Length: 393
Image (tube, rainbow, N blue to C red; front, side, top):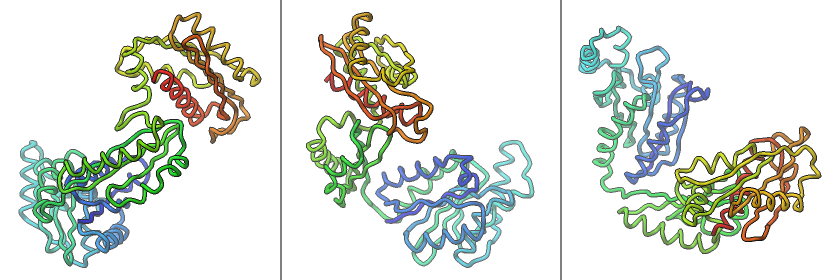
């Protein structure tokens, strides 16, 4: 079954509210085996709502909307759906009674504008909302369905779990299950990963997709099976192929961060870490200290005003001295340029040198990344953390 989620509300388009409803709904539908091919957001405008509803009905078996079911003039979902399917809105007396009963339970009087919420497109099947005042409803249109949910997250989730998902299971039977697993890589670009596993990204089931972030790229493997065990088996087989090609570029999976991996390794091996940072503003120490493990860290920050100080020889000296002074097993020094003339919108400017002293030796690296931008700091931090991770391994 193909589904489309439509989020309705001008506040979503203005960025005043982050649309968490659509993400949560997509997760629930995937667990039910329903394929979500499109997600659309539209403002509070009857004509535009009608347009996106008609577009969705042309390409999806079921359309699920959230939002726009309140009692105010700018709540236009009911009107938009009625216009899309060419029928009038009709008042359902039983819905008025349900809404009034809800207000009575709360010890409040029902306002006249709440009557608006009892109108539904002619022929629609009303669905009671026992946790709010906005009834939802189901519309059938030439073998396609529209399931209309309120936008209040608490109400939307309750009605999805108790009304929408049971209704879907009854309609479609066993559609199987869609599972995903994320492998996390570090210090390797999206394009290089694509070169290595591009052919796997063309597979149909399971599918492989990439999501790039500053300093790391996530690899998502998604499988659809009749049972959880079947889907998990397909994911495991694909994961083995990906890991074979990428090796230790993969540092973890799921929501695991690289600093969690480092902290776990350091605590297990009883290793002490010392950090010296310049242009990262203490980001490395902050990230490592935020892990659940009780990681022992000595950290300090320095200012590098002269770009000529940023060199492999200087950072090696800093790392050696830091290890000597702190008594740490691993001393990581990061020196980077942070000039005012560096590009504020790119990490690919300036220069950073990284040195790691351990086991009576020093490894040094130099990267064409620098500056005070968030992107530059994230890239620098990820490079440094990857160097530390590999040494601990």
